[in-house]
Amino acid sequence: MNILLWLVQILLAAAFGMAGVMKATQPVDVLAANGIAWAPQVPLALVRFIGISELLGAVGLILPALTKIKPFLTPLAALGLLTVMILAMGFHVSRGEAGALPINIVLGGLAAFVAWGRASRVPVR
Image 1 (cartoon, rainbow, N blue to C red):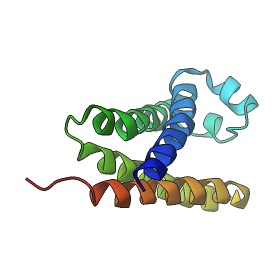
Image 2: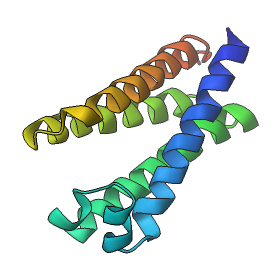
Image 3: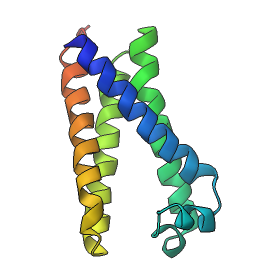
Image 4: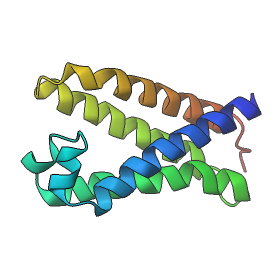
């Protein structure tokens, strides 16, 4: 189970890390050209906030569990990313973008799995 959790954590960290760096650093027109059509239609600060949140969540999935320094932060990072995916689903539904929902559901489900799996392994002190 530990190996499966690590594989999912690495996959999620890569996905959210890449998406986060892109949203935090790229100009809005580049984001729109790369398939993030909603980026020009929301405030730039929101796009940057989402990107930074995804990037920090990606770091939180790996670093605390890897270093064993405050490992309780790993399931919290996973819950944070699950929250981002739930909010993204609502956002996409409100815009009539049902095609984006499967990605949100899969990533959110994987984040929920990591949150459950790592929370059950964190020692209570």
